[in-house]
Image (cartoon, rainbow over all chains, first blue to last red; front, side):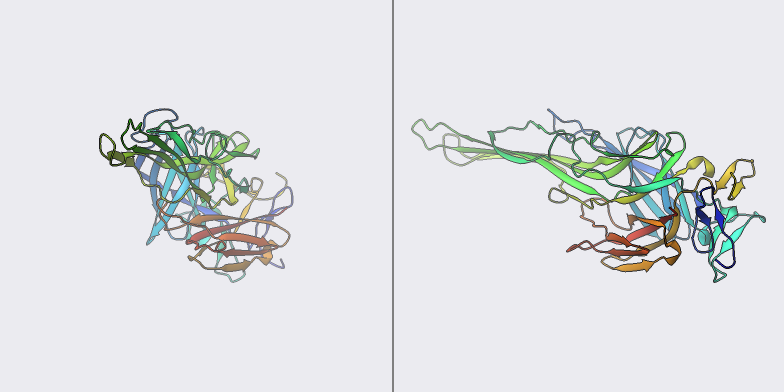
Length: 314
Length: 99
């Protein structure tokens, strides 16, 4: 550059100049209500009933510009994911999913916007850097500029379920079989990424949840009655368990894990037998939840994560 | 630190230090549903570039929402729908690291 300002660090890396826009702290989002559910399959009791559970916390903030959101966990052992971001006017809303069903220890959300959109307050001293057009601000020391202390690309594994292999649909089970044999939890399914700047005291991260998945286990049962000189009667049953997942992330000392946590789940069971035979036809069924789409993983792509020290912005 | 800039808060603690910074924001922009956008950042020549995506104004449940692909070639970042799929509105946050 022939004129202007440039700051470099010890390694000679350019940190501030008139071209690179820095983000600045606009505030913490306000936490509202929450929704806790899916610690197990609704209405089902039996083997592999337990799920990871999840809480969705709802936040909002009013600001100009488009905020980049960092999640600062309170309980670092839980998985976190920003699953929704929406805007109405200048009010932004965020849905954050957390593994487990306890509504205590919700995370904080730190929001950052471009320098031009960041509040300045009443401070009269400091340093501003503008682009060569003289109007677009790239840095303002008064607005708590963001220092990104680490980052990279991460991706969760394609299979969100703890059991080996994806759950399948199988037939040939005894009539009225309704015993799940697949562990739909996700606690053991993640990819870990080393980053020595991560700690479980002050580190916050930004990495939106873009990957989704839906998987089901289905068991079809059948029985044919003995005829004893009468026409045979066919009996059918179907038991089905499904879970919808969102990608989620966990911070450990020196690591960020990219994994999953369940968002919704359902269970259905139906049993029927055809007309004829000694007792006539009939049956029954019940179900909970609606599987949102056919089983698959979507948006399984690397997404950039960044981390920062939350204590700088308290 | 030998070089750079530190900014202190009124209580004397460090609020910002170039010594801590690893990645920097190059740009952030919103891509409409099904749109293709390509931006070139000549100021990031020689830097490593990554991009973060966040769907915006879409429901998280009961709907297949597809993020657009991001391809990075040199200093050009291209955002486009996944092949054969409709992409949802998406915020793209472009970051660079002076390696």
